Length: 235
Ligand code: C5J
Image (spheres, protein in one colour):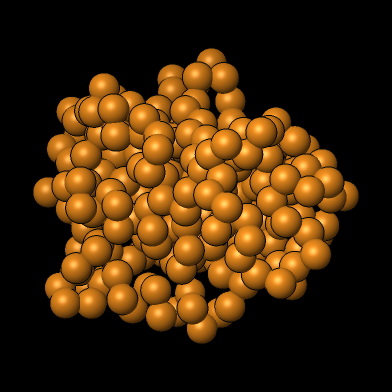
């Protein structure tokens, strides 16, 4: 059996003939959260260090694409009329810039605006699944579960931002739905380093109550060993 070195114990990978049952989930790597001038910055956060994970997520993305494993992106955002944004969410915080207000990258956290785009380094390719979600969790008010069922995905590898908000919420939702969940510690980031560390500890506590935690290098090495046969033929 192939497994990824992980905490609290090795993460078992599905057998080779079911290799496409493992999907990479890239949570909310949007300009609104990662670049100066977006929603994250409007809330008073320092966004710069979120950018440090972009090369790691890009490396994981390249590996999944090479091995022909599914990739799923999420974007947190709302309809232009904000009908899917609860007033309580819009009111929250003491920022002068609120969801739906015009900001330097278009209307804050509104679908279709430049700030809602995924950062250019991780831009989805044609055929890759992009889930627009109004909440923090990727399953709330989306059809993600149906898509995963159609694809036959059983194992979800989580990356993206922010670790303790949308990544952790999505991972807990997935865990409750029976998916085997693995967090890539160097492929996720928080505005608050202590929250990232605490989240990684919580997830793997009590024998992996929410899932497993590993590093990008360990995951990539295991995927290449397990699913080498999936790789594209050299041209
Ligand atoms: C937040 C997210 N932090 N993507 N969203 O509001 O984690």
